[in-house]
Image (tube, rainbow, N blue to C red; front, side):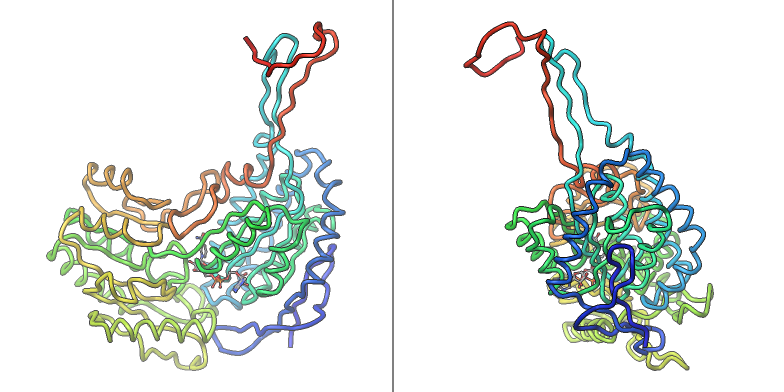
Length: 498
Ligand code: NAD
């Protein structure tokens, strides 16, 4: 059985204690065991990272940026290898796995601009003979705790900005698909990152708690489910760290009566069932406005959903989505589907009996479509994170908007319409962090920032884009006056520049 340890000081290091199983979701087999770090292992890795950080921070920003430049080349070189390893542990299709690497790579590309982003501010002659400047300095040792569903993209969103700012970084990836983060660490070493500056520590709650309580770590970025995001945010903040946590989602797509319904149905199928619904930006709630729109939309959706091809990543391009990540995930999805049936929603496409010949032990879940879902139902209230789309019929645009606004989550949302006024009104009023207008999954590009509102994010800065440089640096402002400008003796009132 393959053993996956940690990446510490530029080497693979075996774990010293507990392990967890890593599945191949397509076959249902346990294909590896991953080490779960203890507090002592985590603390030692952090101490080593802290020792390596000052020399890395002292390197000029252009040279740090060149490490990122080389890293981009290596990601392209190893794209096939990375995608295969990713699909084998996560289950998503190979094209989707390449997208996972690509959207991470784009943030690395953005980080090549670090010398520009780190330039700081300067005021010449702020007073007589006085200059004032602000510089951005690394926060020291930062940590990232990441989820299973984007095992390449999210680790890169965290570590690339942190590292290029001159920090050391402790990555605690998901224990469900740990191989790709380890491969990324190898590539960063090949790209010229000094040993010890990036430590990949595999683990579960024990190592996360060790991160939260470690005095050397000064910033934590988390992505995962909302209950864990809230926990990490409150304990990390209580321990005096800067913390940003991105949580779960329930993304609504509003379909106006004037929308192109063929386009809307295609968008819903891709955004609802792609990656088996295991995306924080997946559309899980369709909100057609008006009974006629709803009837026509369902009519268009059903054949498209029934035609979806579900299969293992090894089937190449001939598959729309693969299995979900673990047997527990599958069980949870089917349990929630059952609550939908029990609570009176109409199950228009029923994927409960889905089974794939030759892959009966894989964690495949057939596509489900619910109609006439109401906001009190569990399938509406909870994040299902599976190939299940719920339709909530709204009587008017205002009712549809209110539904999205009253929801506890606020990650992404979309409106499909031909009416510019409605689209503009929606974008201005909705209390959700990322909005699509005729775009079902509005994930911002690397040079903008990514982040939800309400229970989808905790903390005041977003991921990537300019916010990443703000999160991973602290500002120091220097006021300088040289002896030739000093004329008076001691001053006892607060200085003003009048
Ligand atoms: P998860 O919360 O189970 O795990 C995320 C991380 O937290 C993992 O590294 C895990 O080891 C750790 N963890 C798990 N339980 C813990 C505990 N009790 N104490 C401390 N640490 C713990 O999330 P997941 O299942 O890996 O990922 C899916 C979730 O992530 C979904 O809710 C999805 O919406 C969310 N997500 C959000 C975004 C976003 O940007 N908002 C992006 C991707 C995924």
